[in-house]
Image (cartoon, rainbow, N blue to C red; front, side):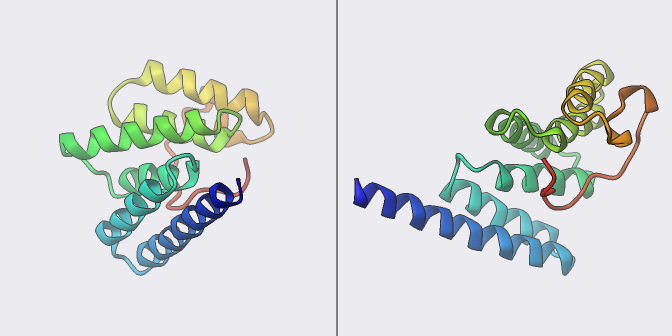
Length: 142
């Protein structure tokens, strides 16, 4: 059991290191390198929603349009929201992905979920028709 806890802690630490490096690279303007680090963080700790959210939000922020990038963006947004279903910001990220992918009905549904989870935040009101820029790192406010 102690070995299992050690392995878990080691992978979580490695993931956190890669994610912090991704954030620093993104702030420095190196989005493709930041996304590579986010992928490494997600691979090291696939049960952590933060690397997946960062990856999806990074691809949204740079308006990634190739089919491979859109597929990755959608998968990352979905995975983050599945891993932490009570997070309004992650449902908002899925809504932004759906809107970017041309599916306004699915975007509205996800925005409604975000609003139900955090009704005080005006950004999460589907009727507002928000076209907000996505964040480039996972929010701490869940």
